[in-house]
Image (cartoon, rainbow, N blue to C red; front, side, top):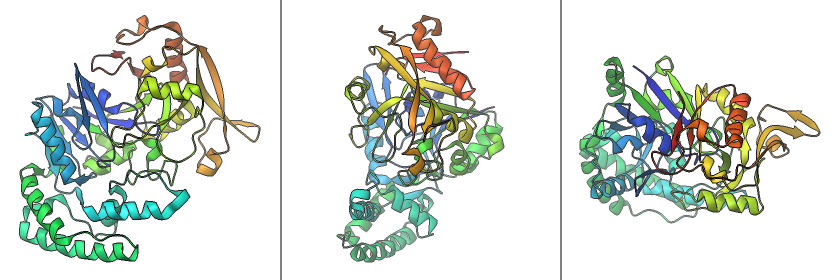
Length: 423
């Protein structure tokens, strides 16, 4: 009987889906606990590549029940496009369950998102414009519409129309184009009817499964430093990707969580605005982009790249109570003459090992690096730790030394099987 949380330890895009896919084989349920369709999880199985935005990564196993938890905000057009795509490729979604307590995203949320971002000018956050933030705003101000309401179609339609009319007043005040109320109502009533078979009381579903002794995997989107409380605010998402958010977003209590796996790339990336101490803006950064295919799964945006930052990882270890780390995309570093790891920061001449608590202070730091010779040989597909080059093993050792927890997995390529699993 075990509940495992998988959380990103950087600014997202760490390769969580690959690790979740690997772990899912030994779990009965894989549940998303926060975020929306602003995050893309990519799974490579054989010669097939799957990009998921809402559906939990465990969908590829017949033995797994995929769950969209109460902490997620759900965009129905995206969900059904994803379901249709998976079904067309022979992947069944019949087992999918969507929490009756999850909130729905509507077109006015995306319109408000775009209007707010446009109004920020040079101070824009870099939102994906998917309506995630405005949907969470509606949730907090108690004007949102929840998944379970689709089970009462007449009341759902009435509330949907009233909320769309109210949203148009907001949009008019912002100088934005209003939504077509009749078209939105007609479309979402149809989507609501399609959603009904998937709706479930997922909180009790998870507790019942746990009490039966079934293993549960809780899957986060985004990452620690995009967390609305613990991330580089305001350049953050609108939910809590940290492991504490897994309890809130699933309904399982904190004492039920047995393992917290932190996912980290062997280097660092981020999308959008905000400080990035170890960022590489030279040809090395360009090489990381090209070799690592660092373009957003959802947006296609080019990611910013830099060396691995263990100051971040130490902080993520604390905030998430990490039990172990999965280090991904080690193979991307195979061709570099040397590999650097940030092990501390220097601020006004003082070396510090703790992560700053404000973006202003973070923007002032200079990275303090430890340099390793490049291993200059392919690690792709290696599955034994001892078979890794000496410098690659040294990189893993630095991560363990700086975080104080073991590296239990090392990713050596995009495919499902390209992973070193250490006992």
